[in-house]
Picture 1 (cartoon, rainbow, N blue to C red):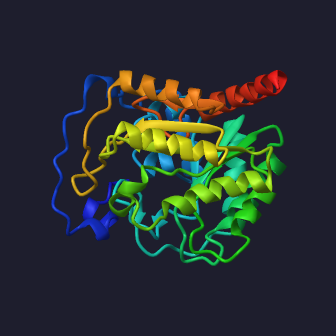
Picture 2 (cartoon, rainbow, N blue to C red; picture 1 turned 45 degrees about the vertical axis):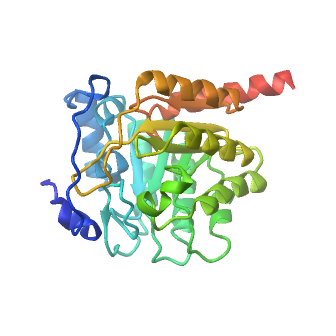
Length: 315
């Protein structure tokens, strides 16, 4: 399928001047996907008419993940009601929800034989509950079809919803609840203008209040213009909200109309962030240039579970 030009995908960015796209350093390059496993995964997703954030957001790890049969399903359509300056998902007026989608997702999870599945979505500010019940139905459908699979959700912030939206998702009992803070609070007006930092933080904290046993996860991008002190403060804020798992990855600019890359953070700096995060008490940390929310999510979940058991054993 031909790629839509940036101006059509992102009408809210059309008036912006082009930002220079710096050459990527050697540590950030990835190979084009060509394996048979990649093609098999793509075919199953196409057959079930499913969207993935891997494609919509232009993830650099799509070749590696799909070749292993891993994919992050994106529910509730491909059109987002928000227009974050870092994101490559199309902005606009979404279509009505597809009531058969939870069943199709569950079928694909079974067909792919996923041990761990990640479900994410666009923002749906047009819906009363932000799509919370659709998330819950998808979780229940997967549990029915693949009772042995663990489920991770990566949700929107449910900022403009009626009361009870978050509770509906938590009551469906995903194994991991992920909501990304994306960046430091000072960059929200330019990077994530439709969101509120402390609302997102409170959302994560509320998940733990509703179900203390549920793993929580959140991530940020670096290279947007933040400084080290700001990243360490976000870590402290996440730990105060009892977040278990943090992901930190390099921001990559999808098109010249998107937020510019301020700099490429070195692998050594990522190592430093990883060490600091473990020092602050996170059970699990993934901090590398190519880290994304769902990258190696299955392996990471296994480690997360082990880390909690180890910590409980020491208590």
